[in-house]
Length: 388
Image (cartoon, rainbow, N blue to C red; front, top):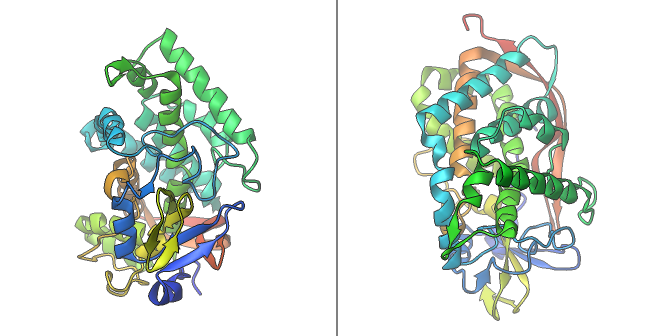
């Protein structure tokens, strides 16, 4: 099997039952697997709520490591929309020309820096710095701040080996408290300052609300972008014809971006808490239990996607749910898409081929399912394009 192949562990259960089951820290989860059901449950915010105990809708649960509500992620309509309206314009900044140019410079530079090296460990030496440096643009803070974030490793919130360890969460809390304090004393044009000056329901946002927004900004797009970047490089390494095609057909990069996001689905699923007794796929779901909306399974549903286990760079119909669905679509999706589009363009312009030297897969253990989500490490060699 190629390193860039990502088997679908949900296929049998999705077709036969529509659900799967897993235990998460003694808080069981019913996984919703079909595309149609995932979308319906995501839209039904009154039965499947996000505004539960902070940390409980995340899988694995974070209830033991935080009590700050991530906003607007852990809030339901109609209040969710009020918070989202405060943030929407800021998170649409990736569409701006200057933002695009600055992000392109960042990504081109990191690609160029890798070209003369005998080996590059993509997760820690490429994807993590790329994600962290790009985040400085999203938050609008000095580029140098990325070095602090890089030092935290691939998970900014959870320890890699212990879902109950608060150590990393406390590091992030302390950092954000200091940044908010700095912005209070010396306001600027960064996201902290914008939030401090924002009003919600006729009042200023509280420090806890600002913390909740910033925690989500830091944690929500970290390992997901790292997985997305790493998996894309692995795919292009084993499909050099795709590099050539995208080089010759640059207009295809938009569709290719959506297809790679669909295929790899860097976030497997997201939970909801059940507000009343109900059913999913004729399976009884009790009040106050949990379901998860399995984006990764929905994105391989053969009733929706032709040849779902194949990457089709020119896929015409691609209603994937990799960035969520309905009210809680990812606020950072514009930023994430922009990163991947620019990265693909930079690779096609500067790199002739990529060789995988060795790798170690990253596998999630989800009850009856084991899902490859990316790589713990992957060493590659980038070969420079001669005329670049």
